[in-house]
Amino acid sequence: MSGKRKEDNYLSMIEELKKDELRQAICLMAGSSTKAEKALLDYLAQVGVKNPEYDKARERRRKAAESQIRTIWADAVIVLEAMEEGDYEELTERGFTDYYFEDANIDDQIGKIRSLIEKEPLSESFRLEMMEQILTDSADYEYTGEEELDLAWMLCESRESKCRYLDILREVYPYKHERTRKILQEIGSEGEYLKYLEDSADIPENAVELYQNYLSRGEAGKAVEVLWKSLERNPNSQLLLDTLFSRAEEDGDPIVFERLAGILAGHMRSDCLQIAEKIAEKLEGESGQEKLDELLPAAFFQTFSDQDMRKWISCCQKKMRPEAYAKQEKALLSYFEKRNPREYCLFSIREGRPEEALRILSEDESIRKENSYNRYLDEDHVISSRLLDLYPEEIERHYWEEVNYYRYTKEYYARCAKILCELQEIARKNGTMDTWKARFDTLVSESRRRRYLLAEFRAQKLLK
Figure 1 (spheres, rainbow, N blue to C red):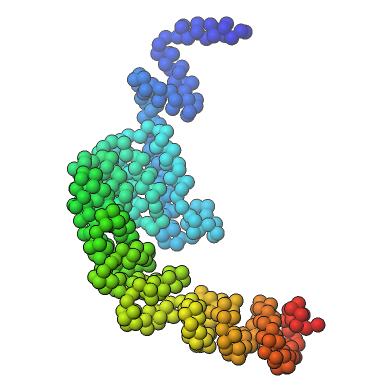
Figure 2: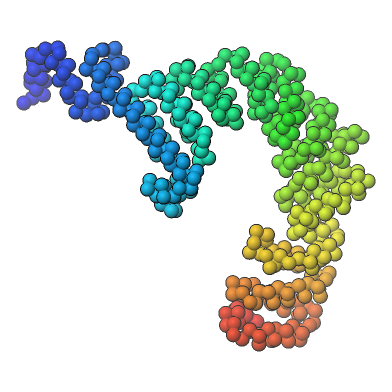
């Protein structure tokens, strides 16, 4: 049968059907497929066609979708409870193996609920109810994040639900400042938004937002004062410091730099060092120098990284007045040695005080802790190699102590052999090969049962 004839036959069949029968036929066909039924219902809703059968089918879909969402979220809460309480039996029953307990999450449940929200008809009352439940449930558990908040926001269509979401967010999640600002910008008036920023300007992010708002309205003085007030309450805020410093650079006012220096000197933190250095460059005159003498040591006492410690002790030496540095020197060097003895030794050698490095090396016992968090002070002989020409006897003794430590542990045999090669080279230079040979022969004799150690000696050509 040709396509045209087939089409004519179908049309004639449809023409013979009464209107009600035609509706029933379409409903029957759509009912055989979930996808087809949804497409039909969506189309009819779009074109405004109403029919009791269609409305009943849509209501069935709504109830089924809402029931599914409730069930899925209840499962998600069970997973959150199990993670919170360490209930591994419950997690195992839900498909997590021992290996994945720490990665147990509710991504699957969230994905399923997202899909239902996007595709299915949901009542406004259910959306409001479910949004409140997801927000309040999620707040009770440590293993929740932005995904749950995003899911609850997906349920908000009306202004009423968005306002309710915002109320819960501000009550239960007061630290979600960025999300609160964005929602208030979307649903609130300009006056409401500005009032929120003014009321919460003690939060650095909100203070900067308010600062920018004032600037856009030409109220520069008011804008900068907002930053100062917020910085008094948040002296370690890198965001506020960055913003104020940028503003100070634009204005070029030395008083601003001195004011910043005073705040930093009392509340220094390692991530403020860059700002402190920039301020130090800007300070001038007697008043500025006094601030600098106070600021630089404060910055140094909050420094933890190797690079920053070297940089800041040098900066203190160069930029502080000699008498001010002299008063602080003992405390600065003591802090340096305590925080990072390895870097302090290298610094002392470069500064022409090798005896300091030798003292610390002689007192050090970190070789016996090298498998702990603290690495071995003289790892790779980075310190001792620089002291060898000045203190050959002391360094040679230090190397033999290492040999005697490493000779007893198989994993260190190669290192032991390497140090013996260094000792051999020192003996050649000093003309003490006989002494070295006698000590080495004694070592070999005492280690005759350590065949892997002797194998390393042969590999290094210390033995034939």
